[in-house]
Amino acid sequence: MTWSFDRLARSVVHFLQVLDELNHLGIAFVSRREQVDSEGPLGRAFIVIVAAISELERSLIVERVRCGLRRAKLEGRAIGRPALVLDREAILQDRRRGQSLGQIARTYRISRTTVRRVLCEKKPLASPVPKGLEKPAA
Image (cartoon, rainbow, N blue to C red; front, side, top):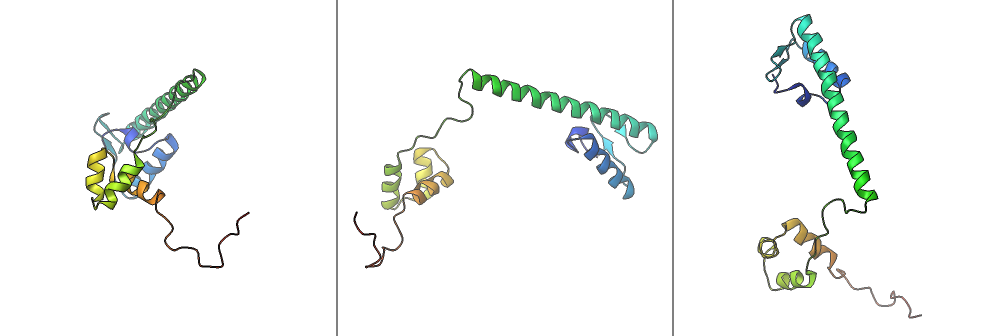
């Protein structure tokens, strides 16, 4: 049992493969929203028709979104999230003072993962270059 056809598969071909697999296992497909049972031939035909319409609807939505993105780019509008502006030095100082990742994240209203990323970017080399292997000054 599923809520809707489009929740089970993304294309008619995939949907039919899933239905065949369920039939081989002796499992009947029932959709609550469409009130359809796949056990009879009429139910199976109706499921295929509705699945094809669902796939068409999804394709039209994808096409409209892509057109909108293209248009926005041509008009010069920024697409996506704005870049995160952080005071990296302040974050590094807070960490040196002994604050935890969670405390720093709450202070700057960012995720702990972002704090980790900032700390990893600014880490000095773990071990200095051994004597004699430094690059000669040009």
